[in-house]
Image: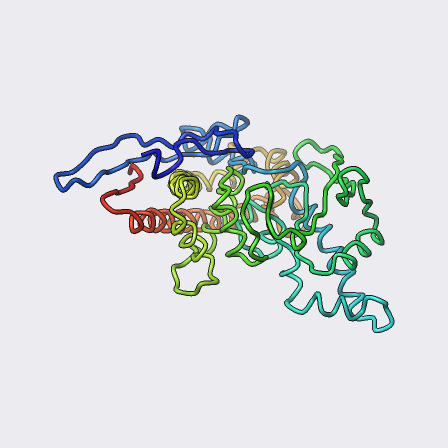
Length: 376
């Protein structure tokens, strides 16, 4: 089986080979078809062990700590995304100022829309391609721009307070934010790079094909680190990545990765399906736990007033606007949101399973006398 897919794959960095992609069992049927059956999987998170009982699962979800996401940095993605917006806003200002020396350059740069000027994590965030929970918990430390005019980009970065590191030649900026979990200020340095300048992504050895969703997914599928597969899963949760004959669609990224017949790409597609099935089961459990226990938020006997107000301060996702006056109003607001969340979690679970099954079917269509399966 080693010649069909890599039984060891990378989790965090190139060459770490920390992921084991061996099947639970292997057998042949009478027709000579070999079956490889894989277990479902969850990303390793030493800071959070999934509770076996549904009440604890519900309570953790209520407090915003139900699941973490693999990340490739230490700064909340919403903080980094805001910095990218500042760059784009300045670019738009220049494009609207006919007296500016970079006026025509800026107009040309914005020709395909501002969302096409970024790639990677920030593109997924700004494009609303992922779940709200991912948007709250994902962290990164860089902005991948996709801008042809490097002179213009560097002009803007310098103008708005970024500095160029003389050793690495990367543009850096120190950002500060309040960590809502610990209530303290944090500071980190983020990096801005221009992927448009790189015909090749030297980190993975693959060509960067563009800034659209298909190109992002394909790069992540080929590299296949935990953070990559997790990001794709969170896209699939929201929009199901429908099958289509459109060669520029996100599903085409899966088709092209499968067509590579490359050991690492095949291994990553298997792992994607394993993690997708595992997370789908988890989301279903969360949805069911909300159905069972959502009524408890209305009763101070189970969740005291101080705790219900604390939930709002720590887990601000429960309240889109200001905290209501008093605990009773807060309880009702959270209860209403729980009704929405239970429907979302169950629908997300269905969406994800659908994509996971289709990816395995896609792999099976590329091989003769071999069937990949994920345990039920």
